[in-house]
Structures are given as C-alpha cells and as structure tokens.
Amino acid sequence: MRQPTRYKLLGVEQTPLTIDELHGVIAQTISEGRQRILANHNLHSIYLYHHDSKMRSYYGKADFVHIDGMALVLIGRLLGHDVVREQRVTYVDWVRPLMTEAVANGWRIIYLGSKPGVAEKAAEVLRRDYPGLQIATMHCFFDTDPMKSENNNVVMQINGFQPHILMVGMGMPRQEHWILDNFEQIQANVILQAGACFDYVAGAVPTPPRCMGRLGLEWLFRLLSEPRRLWRRYLVEPWFILRLFFTELLNHMNRGKHEV
Image 1 (cartoon, one colour):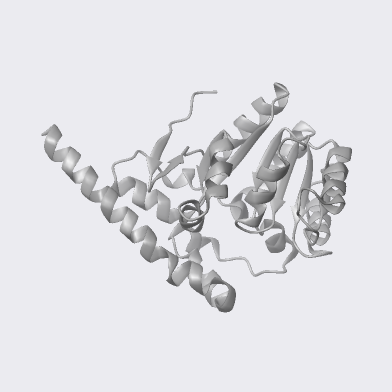
Image 2: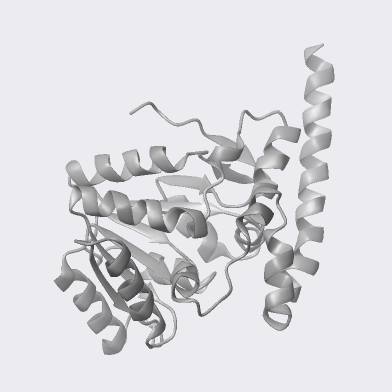
C-alpha cells in the first residue's frame, strides 16, 4: 500500500483516503496484528478540536484521519491541496462496503453506541443483507467513567468478542473521549469513531439523500430533521471555521506571492 498523503487544513492534520484505501489500511493493520485508530474530521470535529484539549489528544493518537464532509474537500481545493470527491468518506456511505469487506475477510465487528435496541436492530438488518457477517452490538447508555466497574465490564465484553474492528458511535466528543480513556485496555485491531451510522441503518434517524451529500448539502437535511439538537453545530460553529479558513487563505495567497 502506498504511503498516504498528509496535509494540514484549518489547523488539523488530514489524510485523504478513499473507501478502498481505508479497507487497505484495515487489512494491513489486521494482518500485521497491530492496533490503530482510524479517525475522521468534519467541520464539527474541527471546531471541537480547537476548543477541547482531550479531542486534540485523541487526534494526536490517531494513525490516520480521513475526510468526513464535502466542505473539507472544497476548502482543501481552495487552499491548493490535491483532494478529490472520492476521498470524502462518511459512514452513511461506508458502512455497507465495510460489511462486504468484513464478510470477505472474516473480520469480526462490534459496534458500541446508540440507544438500547437500536444498534441490535441495525445488526439484524446487516446480518440479513450480508450472510456470514460476524457482528455484535452494545448500547452506549452506561457510566463511561474509566474508574467505574460498569465501564470496565463494557470493555471486558468487547474484548471477549475478540473483534478485529470496534466501531464507537456515541456522538462527538463523547465517543472520542471514551476511546482515548480506554485505548490501552481495548483489544481490537482497528478502532473507528462511527457516529450514528447504525441509527441510520436501523431507520431510527432518517438518512440524508445521497445526492445532498455529494453536493455538500447533507448538513441542511440533518438540521431540518433535528433542529433542536443540531442548530448550534450548523448555524453557530461555522463562523469559527470561516475565520480559520480566511486566515489560512490569506496565508496561502501570501505564500503564492512570495513564490512568484
């Protein structure tokens, strides 16, 4: 596998990867018996990164940080980076190709997240659609304090399944905090911050039309679907991102002038 390109955008490191390239990283990690965090960034996570020291520690521990959001593809292009649409990988699009790859390679997957019953409903859908899929689920309604027995029991159950892939879908920043707190105890080759992808599979949350995702308008569908929960993310946080963008754009333009 070729060495992925890395660059810094809006103050965070990115590793643009396609779905096939992500599968290659996972396969290599499992075959070598290693452990890796495959993280991702969207505008919301970048906002949190700049406001939450624990999020910065989490991303510092991640081996690869792929792009989850068309806005980052567009911003990357404007700032002169060689990034293409196919390198925007969101779990709504990735979850099913990942299951196909898991069946083909015999990977065991466990998903930690969602409300009680929701993740298992999603797993039933995936088992039906992908015969032979080895998948288990656990809901995320528990005390995540790493010093509490409830949290330790969750980690023990995860390790008991001997997963190749652990998908954590607790929402940001709770899922990243939990991974960081428990990383040393988790026995899984690949750890993914998967958000609400099983909520979509189960039908608990409406899936944005994929054409809106390709146009960079998925945020609008989500805002209209859950305005009380998401208004701040989509109407307030982007102003901070806009300031980062213009600062970086001015720096990029000044570098261009000096090179001329």
